[in-house]
Picture 1 (cartoon, rainbow, N blue to C red):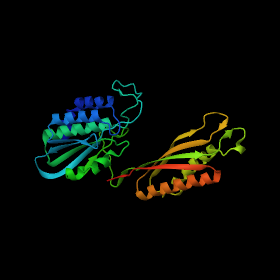
Picture 2: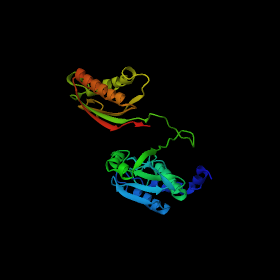
Picture 3: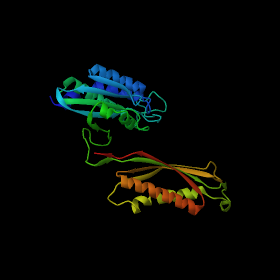
Picture 4: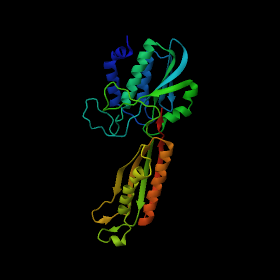
Length: 301
C-alpha cells in the first residue's frame, strides 16, 4: 500500500492532535505540556528509545528499521507566539496572549503522524531520530540542542525539516538547492533630540524628522547597494513617537526586520544600515542608538 494512502487513515486522529496542541500553546523553552503530550504519543507508538529534557523541553525519539543504515533526523518545532488569538475558532487558544500563529502545532502533528507510520511499518534500513525542538521563534532552541550534543549522541547523518506554507497548492512540496529561507535580523533604533512646543520647532532638535529621513533612506540600500540578482528585504515594522498633538517629542523609535540569503549580503545590509542611521543622526543633530540583533542565519540546502 502506498505511504500516502496509509497515512491518510490517520487523518481524523491527527486533526484531534493538532487541535489539542492549538488550544494549548506554550512559548520558547517552556513547552512542558506540549513535550509531555508528544512523549506519551511516542510511547504509545512504540518507539525504541525516548530521550527527554534536551534543551529543557526538547525530545528525541528513536525508531529502528529492519536493517543496518544511517540515522536520519526528522525535526519539528513546538513553540507558539506571544499573540492574542481572535480567530473565533472552536479550537482557538485557551491561553490568553499565546497562539500557534506560525503553524508549529501542525509541524508537531506532521512529525507525530510520521512517527506512528514509521514505528508501525519499519520498512526502512537504519534509524530515524524524531527531533522535537523548543524555542524556534526566539531563544535558538535548535542551536541549544546541537550544543547539547544530539548530532554526536545519536550519530545523525542528516536532518530534514518542513514548514507549512498556506496559500500553496494542497499536497505540494517546495524546495530548492542552496538558500531556501532567509536570515532574520532585527534592528531597533532610538533617536534622541530635544523636544518642545510644536509651534516653535526652531527651539527643538526634532527626532521625528530625523527618523523619517532614516526610514526613507534605508530603503535605498536594496535599490542602490544590493546587487539586483541578490534577494533581500528591509521592512520597518514599528514606529513610536510622541504623545500629544502639539509637542515635538524628545525621543522616537523604530524597528526593522532585515532578511537576506547570503553572508555577504547580510553583512552589507548591516553596514549600510549603520552608515545611513548614523549619517542622518549627524546631519540632523540628533543621537541614534542602534540595537542590531544578529538572528538566525539563512537555511541552506
